[in-house]
Image 1 (cartoon, rainbow, N blue to C red):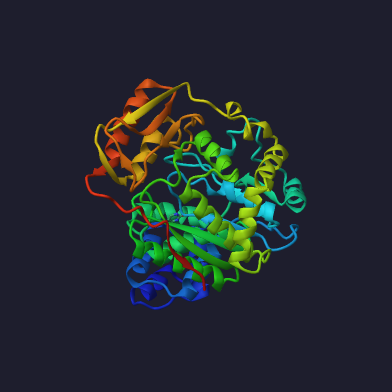
Image 2 (cartoon, rainbow, N blue to C red):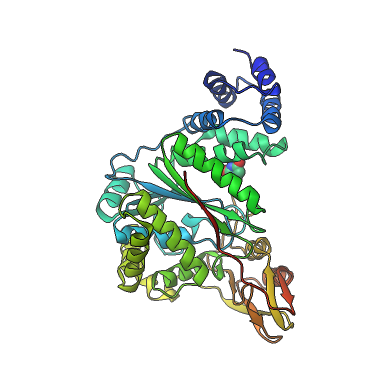
Length: 435
Ligand code: URA
C-alpha cells in the first residue's frame, strides 16, 4: 500500500477502505508517513468528506492507537458524560454524586484545564487532600462499592489523535465535522464507557458558534458512537453566556455544592438534571426520563445527593467538612464589585470574555505548565434578560493580585451589553439528539 495512492483516492472523492485508514493511522503514529503526506490527505478529506463508515473506522483506529481502558471489573453499564467545553461548566461535580445517589455508577476520567478555568480534576483539588490518582484496583473497588470515582486521565489515550490534531491545527483542517467528531469520540471510546452522554455547547463561548454547526457535530458524534456499539446521545446546550454564576475553580465548587443542596442557579440545575437523567436511562437504572428526573429531584431534596458528595470527597482523601464550611476551600484575599453605571436589561454576556477574565486572574492555565490559583474567579450577578440599575454590581471579582484584578475588570466590563429594551432570556437546551 502506498500513501500516494490513498491521497489520490480521497482527492477523487472515493471512500477509503478500513485497510487504508489503518495504514495511515499506524504509519503516521509510528513516524513512517511524513507530515506533508498526511497534510495532503487531511486537506482532501476536508474537501471531499468521509462516509460514516470511514469516520467510525478512523475513530476506532485512533482510539486503538494507545491505551484502551477496560472498565469490565465494574458491574453494570458504565455511562460517561462529555462536554465539548464551556465557561462555568461544573456539571460533572454535580451530576456524578447525583447519578450515584440514584444508583448509577460513575467511573470517570476527567482532564485538567487549558484556557479559561481549570478542568474538573483541578476544581476537585479545591478540596484539600483530594487525590486524583488512585490505583486501578482501588478505582474499580470504589465504583463497585460506592458508585463514584473521578480521577485524572492516566495512560496514553489516542496518541494518534494527539498527533493528527496538532497537524490539523497548523494546516487549517480543524473545522471539519468528521475530523472533529472522530477526534473527540476516539478519546471517549478509549476511556472505556459502554454508553456516552454528550453535552455539545453552542454559542459565543463554545467551540461551535452556530446552532447549525453544534447540531451537525452532535449528530456526527452520536452516529459514530452508535455505529461502533457505544450507546450515545447528545444534548445541545447554550454557551452564549456562562453556565450558572460562578467562573473559577473553588467558586465553581461552591456553586456545585449549592446545586446539590437544591439552591443552584436555574440553568445549571436544569442542564445537570437533564444530563443526569439521560445517563440514568442509558445505564438502565431508570426506565424513563420522567422516572429519572423524579428520582434526581428526590435525592436533592432528601439530602442523599449532598451526602454522596461528602462520601466521595472523603473516599478520595479530601475533607468532607468543606461541603458545609466553605472557609475550608481556597479563599481569595480580596473582592471587587463590577458596576457598569448603566441602567437597562442585560442583552449579552460574552462567555469567552468572562473566561478570559478568569484566566487573567489566574484561574486557568495559559500553558500546560502554568500554576493555577484555585481561589480566584468571578461571580456574575446579572444574566441575560435581567434588569440592572446603574449603581448595581453585575459581577464580583475574587482576586489575589490587584494588577490582575484591574485587567479582569476591564475585560468583564466590555463583556456585557446593556439594552434599553426588555430582553428575552436565552434558551438553555436547543436539542436532544439520539439515534
Ligand atoms: N476537540 C478535540 O478533542 N478535537 C477536535 O478536533 C476539536 C476539539
